[in-house]
Length: 453
Image (cartoon, rainbow, N blue to C red):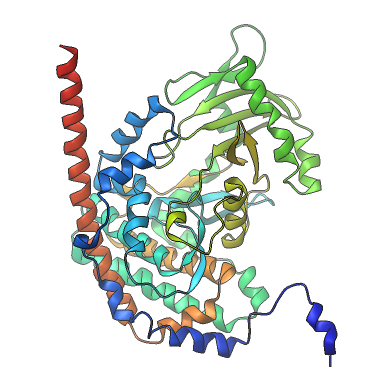
């Protein structure tokens, strides 16, 4: 009917849903579903300590000890800061070849609440520093392992954690099948409506309600001593005010950033003026990366806006992926990956460049909240795991080929059971690696103390 005109259609078709599902089923020959349980540390071509040391390059040297300190606090803390180790480990394993946009650092604390452009609260995956295009199951293996580690940290036995991981995977499989049968546009705008019925999330969403810009103003700033208004408080090394040429350099980067926003959002931002700039330490994996915040003011003192300017250096998975461009702007890649996977994204999400380094820009503390690990115990762990499965399935369906995923997963539970076994084995490996790091840091401190005598 459309003839040759369709040959010029700007968005190339990816084939029929039936063909893509058949392609996914055929991938079982490449990677048997039960083989996802495999983990063997003897196949490592690296040592975790060397990979961690390599990942410290380019960070602010004075903050590297703080990153290690947060990592040795617990096995889960180590896991959060050791994406480079798991990326290398996953690269050694066979995979499906079903490439999808992945979060890359999918773990229980990287889902959270934030404010949508219309002001309502949204709960979704909310950290994309490691996002890239890679085998879809890498997200599942990382999130599944995090559930085991979080369960252990909350005092739960492995049997209970295994049940939670299985619930996560079965919910993922169920919703992937659902999304594969829905109209494409309905998948793109699908919302999860039952969040307030999940105990850990109802508490988190109430916490997010209180995390208003005015609350951030009170927690991050203090009255200025030499004049009216407020400025960032000092809490070194976690929070440090910047002034002079440093502050001007950060403010100058806002021009490039504004050009990455939609015109109507540029207009909104133009009604704010910068008040103060700081350096802020965040998270575990990001400690040591350059992270700045700008405090802006709109219609008076009670109209604050905080923007975070976060250094992005590229996903830890990039060295193991031949199909991904290595020379793109890493802030832009993170923003585009986030927009692809999230239902709605921060209206001020964009990117910029400072001193030849790539940065992501987003709002800071606008109704944001994340789960506390100690809330993941008892039925709460399983309930939260099920929500994780639903949200990750939606993110993968929005940004990849859910038909191929469903074709590969099939109707049985062999894939789910295999990932459960992997998650427990890799959680054990994580604890072993954490102990090695802890002993290494103790030895380093002992040598440093002896050298001072």
